[in-house]
Structures are given as C-alpha cells and as structure tokens.
Image 1 (tube, each protein chain N blue to C red):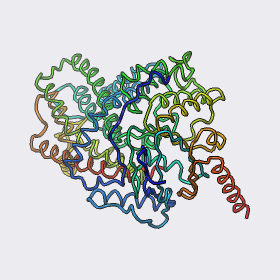
Image 2 (tube, helix red, strand yellow):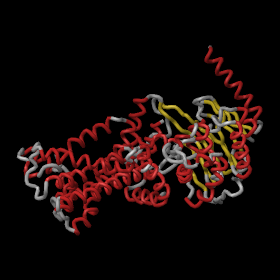
Image 3 (cartoon, helix red, strand yellow):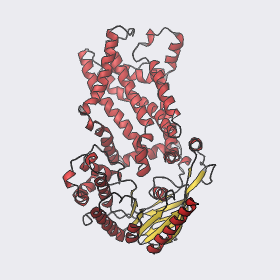
Image 4 (cartoon, one colour):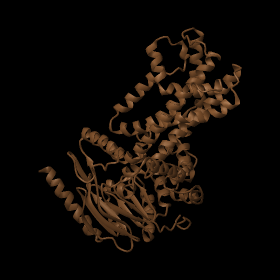
Length: 293
Length: 263
C-alpha cells in the first residue's frame, strides 16, 4: 500500500486557537459559509448519497417511498373531500389539486425546517469524531428536503394533467424564485432550533408543536375567504407562512402571488431571520458542540 | 518539550474545560450562545461553578519521525486532547500549530453507513478524510488489499464483523499519508495478524510523519512508540523517550490510584 499512496507536501501552517468567530459580522459569516460549502462540495455529495439513498436500501420498495409518501397524503385529502368532511370554499381549481399544491409546498417547508433543526443533533456521533465544517451538514439536510420535493412535484404534475389543470409556463418558471423565502424562513428557524435544542430539548418540542398550529392557520386546505371567524382571519393575515407558502402555490396554479405586499414583507423578514440565524449558528455552534459530550 | 524546528505539531498551554453538572451545562450553553450572538467573548478563560479543566495547560511538540504514545487512566483527558489537536473541539486556552495535513482516526466507524457496500464506504470515508475522488480511485485497490476484505467489497458494511469493520477503517486511514496521524485506541478488536500489519504500517508512516497514538495497551505503546506522554487530571505528568520507564511510571500511578480507591 505504502508504495503507491500519494503524499502531499504541505507548507501551510494551521493554527487552532480559542474561537473568535463572535467578532464576525453578518456578511463575513455568510461569505465564509458559502466558501466552505463550495470547498466541501465533494464531501457534500458523498454525505448526501450516504444519507439520502442509503436510507432506502433496506426497504423492499426502495426509493419508491419518495413518491409513495406524498401519494398517501394526496389520497387522504381527496377522500376527505369526497366524503364532504371539508368545506373548502371556492378555490378556482379542482379541490384535490388545490390541496395537493398547498400541502406539497408546506411539506417541503417543514422538511427543510426539520432538516435544519436536526443539523447538530442528527450528526452527534459524526461531529464528535470527525473534523468537518458543521454548516455542510445543514446543507445536506436541505438538499435531501429539496430532492424529496422534486420527486413529489413530478408526481403532482401527473395529478395536474389528470385533473386537466395546466399551470402557466411563467408560473412554473417563477415558482422556484418565489419559493426562495421559504428556504430562508425554514433555515432561519431550523438553525436556531438546532443550536438551542442541544442544550435544551424543550425548544425543539415547542417549535414543532407551534408549527402544527401554524399549519392550521395557513390556508392550505381551505380558501381564506371561507373563514368567517374574524379572530382566525386576523391570525391568518398575520401569519407569514400564509403569504410565503400560498404564493408558491398560487404562482403555479394561477400565475400570480397570493398577496404582493404581504409576500414582500414576509420575504424580507425571512431573509433577515436567515442572516441572524446563520451567523448565530456559525459563531456559537462550537460552544454547543462541546455540550454534546 | 518546547516546540522545535522539526516540530510538525506543537501545543502550547492547551486547555479545554467541561461542566460536570448537566443543568448548569445547559445554562452555560445558552448563555454562551447569547454572548456569541451579541458579539461578546464567552467565558472561556475562567472556570465557572461545576466546570473543570479536562485538558489543563498542556504543552508538547512532536516532529517527523516521532511516534508519540499517550497513556492515562479513564478521564485523564487523552481523548479530549486528541479532539482539540484534530480540530474537533476548539481549545479554551492556548493554541496548536500544525504544519501540514493532519488525519485523525478517533472512531473507526464514524461516517460509515451500515447499508452501503465496503466499496461505497471507502469512497465515503476517503471524502471525509479530505481525499478527492481521483485520489481514492488510485488508492482503492491498495486499501482493499491491505484490509483483506476483497471478498466483501460489494457486501454491506453491516455484514462485516466488528474486527473487519476496524480493519476497513484503519486501512482507509492509514492510506491517507498525512504529516500528522492521530489514532485513538482503534487497534483493539483486530486479530493478531492484522494488528501486526497495522503496527508495521504505523511504524512506516512514523518514519516520515508524526504519529500520536492513544492506547491502554502498554505493550503496544512500548514496542511502537519513540516517546511517551502520561496524562492525569488533564495534565501531562510524564514526558520522555524512555518508554519502558514511562510505562513503569504509569503502572505506579495506576497502583497508587487503586490504593486510593481502596482506601
């Protein structure tokens, strides 16, 4: 073995000192994280393959689970509508399509949020034994959520075709851009949860308990006009997910944003939260990692 | 030992602290996160209530050709020291200077996926250790030959015994050809033939690189190392090249600790 192993000559000196990242500003943290991701792309690909595809290796149905899971969700909503349990109001397109589009985007958002929140805890053994930048673990989680989402979208396109709903081409093209603030919001919340849940698991439970409630005040399975209760209407209007999730759905189904002003305000807020959380994660994660021991 | 010209790794006043009270550790953790968030240095220099130095003002240097063994009782700070040296945990005080590439094998199965094949795991482990795909492709045959797992190359790692698992991890690690190689008690659970092969490989690497190895196997350390550090209470209490004397010192230390416990 020894004869053919290449030996690299390093003239550089690495100095490991007490962390002084807390002195960095938001821009510097963002730039450093992006550079680390670019430098570690090969490792990201390997770890993504490990975490994503290897999960299905022990399942008889293999990667089909990627489409089976959303399919079960779609069928549940169609059934509930068929037995008249739901009173969705007038949504302008066949109800299953409306629900499918909304829940699909919501599922993607929650999947990114769960992934980001799992960044440190999910890789506990890894983090304590291998020196790798921890921000790439977050990227791997986000990538997994995005690949799942793409599989679900492909399946949903078939449902749209069956229902004879043809999205506008510009709606489909613009949808990824419109969806970007959802990535910021999920990462913003998730990275904070990832940090704090290591020292106190309460934060994780609280966040996901609260997100269960947020889902019900986001018009995913009903039209917002169908809500008669003024308090509930106000909560729906104040909920940033209403604008961010519903705008992606509406862009695909109707070729327009849900509410332009609400969307812009929510998108700016999501981006600021993302910057704050990314910096907090970058500067404080090592103080948290040592609590894992 | 002060840093020397040929030193490829030098630690100077290295300290790392932990908290032994879970609730207080949570509180300190939250406090440190908030402090970092607002740009204030967290309390790294001093001990707060229930905190202790797991590694306390450790200074030493190793150069090319050194095979440095570290021995000590459980909780003496060996693994924490290795974690700090390999960049897994940042120190609270002091610094480490590393000239060249460091490869650390602190856990034999960290990063392996049980359902992926041996071949897939070689690529994965190589990427984790900083190798490019091309480099791993060039080394794959030698890793497989060295590990003796050619018959299992397309079998999932879960099908391997623990000893075979260790052989795979060690083979990938030993092929990295780093300038500093850090190993934490990973030769245990391997059969005698493979252990001998691995020891020879470590010895060979040690001629052109620095090796730091932690083990409770004093016979192994005595036969392999050119230098020994004995740790106790987070400090280096014995440092020398006469490994026989070092092992004897460690034996006395253990015996005294046993007497204290009995008393």
